[in-house]
Image (tube, rainbow, N blue to C red; front, side):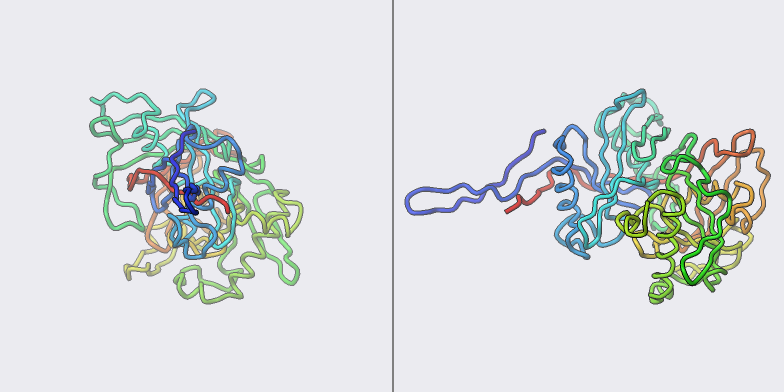
Length: 398
């Protein structure tokens, strides 16, 4: 690993003392879908796990809720790190995702990020980790996601041998269109728990004073799905309103923690608290009219299900890419509570599931296996953009 060192010179009597104050490491900042993160080439990082952890925490600035001293911005969808390197297996590259804490020194690699997968493809192309024919308009990049031990195929649009940025494809939650990236995850079930439905299609969860009928689906990331009606909600309330209801947020987190124990992901509630990024939790309800943050009305006939999710304890502005994959799969898996409230589909062919979320409608491609018991693949279309490339400075420990 090569790093640059910034030095402060301090004069003491007749001699100079050189005090190392910061070191630097190459990085790139990408947006993928509605997420943003710091991307590192694995060869540029130290091998030591604790040294990497220090770089990630300081680079994002997990110490401060505002993350003003780093490249985060105080939200779960911008407090992210990706490490990409030449694959140790048969794929083109290996990809590892890290969720970084906000106001806490947390580096969590238990889950993955679906939105940033598009940017992983862009990084692989832009950094020369895959061979590209400059005369082609697209390249397929094979990726092994180490977090969920799943294989991805990312179709990256090209211009002059680099990842294309401009185009006419819109992603809900973004104002400008971009070039369309297609991300397909093969056999996405059971990456974290070993089973697509680790506690069956539906489960009666006791949290102490209350009981909830939940479904836990492990596709890309494990998600706990709760019906809005069981929380006394319509499911179409605006995030700003729900974010003021601290009792509600506390109860949703309580459900998430108990579900984590029920699935065997964690041995206790206290252990589950140490991994706030997985399982994630979402509220689902049947198709209905609702108003997004811009004031536009989404019509019931234009969606197959309406949902909102929480990430790191806060309501997500849009919906995590991994969650879009998971909810689309759950909509086809018979007898899950998502399936029960979603618009009914034939399960013997590929479908596009239209998910209504706080910023609009996301469309996810999904197909089941022939026996209809497992998910064959899920696919999502995103945009991606390289924002800046340079040296990230990390303060030395005093």
